[in-house]
Image (cartoon, rainbow, N blue to C red; front, side):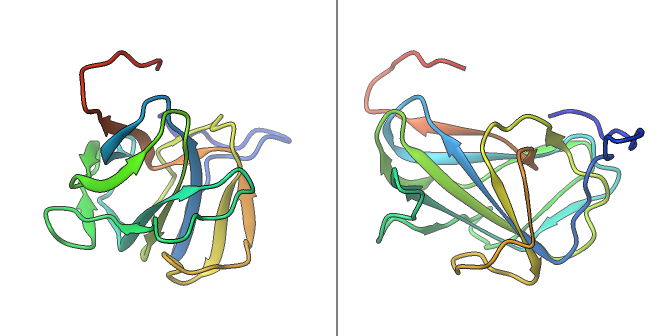
Length: 166
């Protein structure tokens, strides 16, 4: 993640979100049977509320594979408050994945986030909804971006110890 930046000329400043769902696609390097998602508010100036989140496998056609969507939980709850300046890890998620699989990670932020703790070059298109919680539901994107928002990684539990490329 990178610190927020102000807009300069033709370059926009770091985005903020409010009452929106952000759907991001990530590609894994390792396969395994369980996942944990690492969220981040490292550069946030206020607590970040994740109202809901989900993860699902995405096929080569970009569509969620049926039966793979899972609710992301935090200490057994469907939402989390991530303190300003902090990372946060989800509960383990039972979802078998193959090496180089793609995941769709959706998160709903019900309140104002302030400037995003983002990584500017996510290299995949992320979809941002209009107002509302669309976790687990289709939506027409009100905007797209290539930054990673509030997401810093995915850990995969493998059946055996293995190296991975970061």
